[in-house]
Length: 129
Image (cartoon, rainbow, N blue to C red; front, side, top):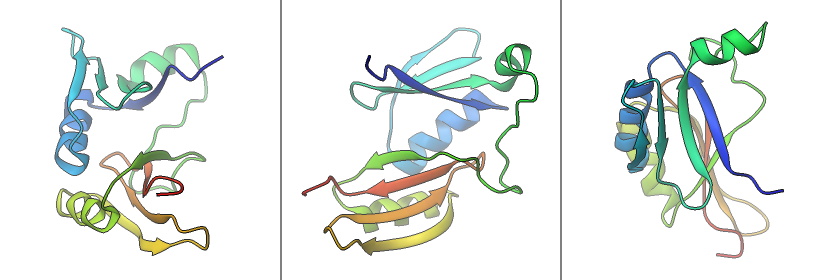
């Protein structure tokens, strides 16, 4: 097994992709002509967005992410060379700051924000970097 992709179900795919471009500097890798699905260029594992209507049809009880509610029990982890700069860029683009950059006992720098849809995003330095 290998992790192929992570899909965030969102109310507006184009708005979420635009937010990730502004806040994190990620470029689109694929955008379906319907506008209901898109992937960002993130390396080997794709970060994708799909309209919430897709999962609502196949997963009864689906709970969407919303900024006004507590974040779901997962995070998107993005590795950055300069975590404080990445944090500042994300907040300037409209991300909600959760935890300012801190250096963990093992040397990794970690910060948290919430994206435009309320998803928790970790910004971190590479392990051992």
